[in-house]
Image (cartoon, rainbow, N blue to C red):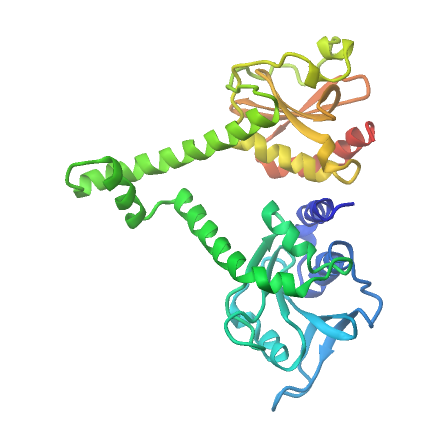
Length: 370
């Protein structure tokens, strides 16, 4: 599997098991060691590659340990400090990393709670680990732009010089993106003032500022949705989107009748429906289904298809190869799962997380088209 698929598979495992992982040791066994082994590609059972409970005396500190040291070409290259799932990550939790970093050849320090991974290096002072990470990876919200940088740390492609040379840019781009995300969630006074001054010629009174706080927040959400919609139009050959339709009262439907796609090779060759709008919630649901199904199929084969009645998840962009359907257009949410005869059973869900309850059924549906 590609590294993106390995990350997605581990993310699915984390989502399913997070409620059962209660300790640091459980986090190591369930998530951190699999990350080292399956994502980075190191043999966790070979002490020449991965040293657990790595110990060296540092000054007056005797016998302190860092959770893992990864060895490449005979030298320690990466140090990993582990915390339990859900534990906060801050510079205060990385004291061992700071000390060991200064006395080893390691250029990369990692602080993780299994879900969030903070990657550090020594941009500010040689052989002294920076206080701020240059890369932050969240397994439950993977930024695809960061995957190539993680790949540089794998056993097969280890390239520490390339990682360090790109670290400063990554550090500040990441910080800017997180600041933008914070503003999209809840724009602060300065952000509102700047945007208001660009479009409003009057005095920015308290009343105007209050009014524009709402408008700025709404405009940013609409802008983001428009960008996503434009990307999907391009990816799906110019298909438009809009929301309409409601889930029927019946929970189980009969097998669907053959459509135009059944007469040809794939639905990509057919005229697609127009006048539908894809929502962010549908896209998030698609990503969850895709992360589950990638254990059976390559990610490139799992594609979205929005229609007026439902949001479909298909294999090879072919309506004859469905994995699941999302019926989100009428307020009440349903996850539609289809059997080998294409008879659909709809399961009511309250939140997107509940999709993971049907992971086995989704994998069976995906495996059908492997």
